[in-house]
Image (tube, rainbow over all chains, first blue to last red; front, side, top):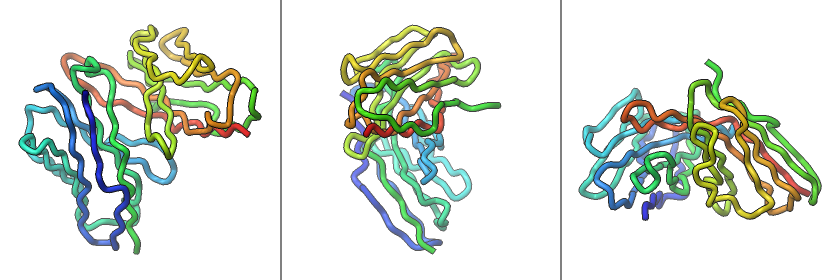
Length: 116
Length: 116
């Protein structure tokens, strides 16, 4: 069965520090999709990125970057020069053939607190 | 473009009362999902629809919960009778499969339900 583990329950950093959020997944499929979502204090869930299992290139979007390593089944998320507005709960999720690629299996989330 | 719309945003009710949560998915999306989020259990998928048809309701906690999607632009999640342990944030999300692309789900703002 598919599983997503976010071992870091809570991370606290000071503004301008870099921070990496870990995500480890389990799936028996060779084709799958990985996602990151952000949930700020206001409560909504905001989509950040989707990555398919055949694309191992790292991706950078502004201060955000993602490191996909199939060999270690990890899809880690790094925020460079963190800002107070980055404070949120971040969820990693997986979609694979078990669900017909229709549903997402979410990790428990990592709460990031960025202080000024 | 309007995102996923949920109503009400907040609901406070007494144990035993019927509660109806409403969702309008993004126009053109053919998948609709209902999730429940609690501190203890994280994000749980309750049920999802494809083209208005329920596909998997295995996450619905018990018979007190029911969901309908009478048309492509409206869905309801009903709890009858409600219990204090149903207190949670309920999210609705929608997505579209596209052509061979496993697309991300877009979430509504959530309904915070409190059952006294």
